[in-house]
Image (cartoon, rainbow, N blue to C red; front, side, top):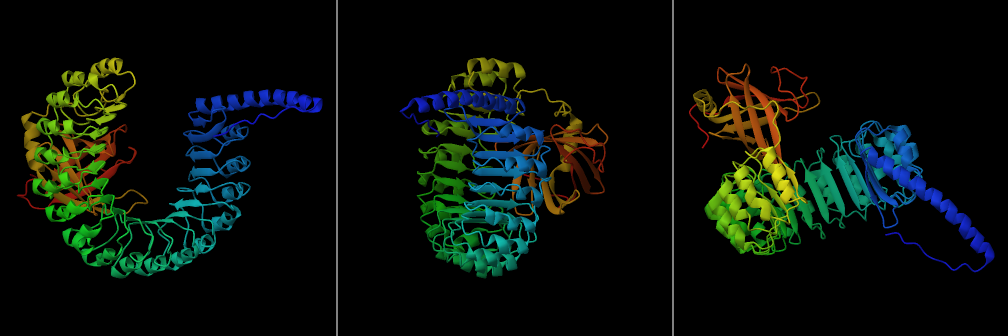
Length: 607
């Protein structure tokens, strides 16, 4: 917050000085307001303080170096985010003159180490994010010239072990994020010198147990994020000895059940992320999960956890946030323990939840956030939500909710965000939501709701952002009750496995797809699965296939082509908004994803 100080005018000279300064201030104010207006016209997000001075600017889209000159008069600017656009190294020479900057984010591949050299005048800089730039090891020579630098992001850059040697000398660092496949155990050893470091993020590196043993000497670490790393018992033994470790993130790490036992010696853990690991029930038992009484946040592994593993959380009564595995291995029996966790404020229970389990969720009186994407929940299960007075976020995308269920939801007048994408609701049901006057966002994309119904509801709820009911150009409108569709669904039913065909610069990956009557499940190497609805048009050549799925609360629709030949399923898909691929080698469509799969068992049918 910036305030003005009023001083007494003690002499005629000071009075004159004040008049001159005031006139100058008026001109500066006019120029400042003009710059802010022009930035906003170009699509920038500008935040101002109580005096109208810009304190934060976020630039997106087609910004150029010349546009950066509009920042020059913003003398109180402390935060700047430059994402994309046509900004080059030369543009950073302008940014380097904004001495008030404390937080700078630049995510642009055209930026190189040369450009960072122009920023060394920014002596107040505390946070520098260079993710997705083209900086290399030479950038490390400039970083010590930011004396107050506390937070540094270097994900997806060209940094190697050589650069880490210099970075290890930046004594002021408290947070460091690295994503680079050329970082090894030899480079990590240099980070042990960072005595003030409290948060370390290492993703897609080549470090193994030896590097983790180096991290074990960083006694000040409180948060450790290890994504896509290979870890064994020695590595876990090292990090479990960190005396102040509160948060451990192992997403997509290559970890086996027999390696995690040392975590039982890390009793201070408060937040544990295991998403995408191969850890199963046995591993959760080995790490002593049931004894981690301080846990307030837990993300369970995706693929291999069953009722046996979920039962271990029954005594973790301090949990505030819980993510259950998005798989069908957790049944109603496993969900019985959920009702004991009465301090829960956020619950993600995709696919595993049924109407029976909803009775347990109804006991969570402090629940504020509930994500049930793809769950086996029907209108009958929604009645248990009436006992959740604090519920403000509810995601029912891909659930079996109908218009009757919306009548039940109409009584949850405290709701602020409601997501009903890819459900069979209609215009008739949408009328029930007119009572939700606290609603800030509603998503009905992929439902039967029309644009007319959305417009009608907007008049009743003018403060609600409503997404959906749009015209779907280029998507399948073919009658899904046609006998030809039924015959094609029968051919696809079952599980298919193979390899995703990579685009240039990407790695091939294992993939699995399971087709049921109206739903399809995609599974990756790590065990993660995503469920979607699908439509077919077998009369086209190649045949058409459309998917609709919920990704982080947003409905994502994809257009695809496919063919079945000699037991091989070939797919090519693009995200909504691009043209459908013409053939299986078509690269004109942006973000095309291709796969070639074979049926796991000819007689296997998806349940």
